[in-house]
Image (spheres, one colour):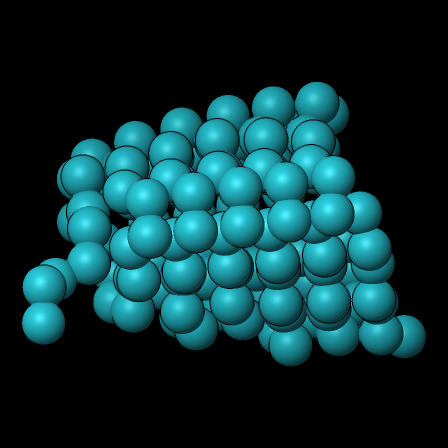
Length: 116
């Protein structure tokens, strides 16, 4: 794990939260990872203002969580997904592998990227 925290950054890992090998957290704002949440290997968290992940989430390998992302509890995010700035993923949702999430996702939804 590699941390690059600014002077006003705040990193909160709740009980049982786990960051995989090679995961990078770059923050000048607040990062909160909920209780029992697992963040896969080589994932990247970038927080100029904040990133919030709820309890009991499973985040796959090589996932990008950009600034302003809010992830609810019991969320599953597949490998290599990208949550772009301001994305919101409510409780119980599933983001499929390699998806790009730019907008809020509906509650308890399975989401994937649209074909272009």
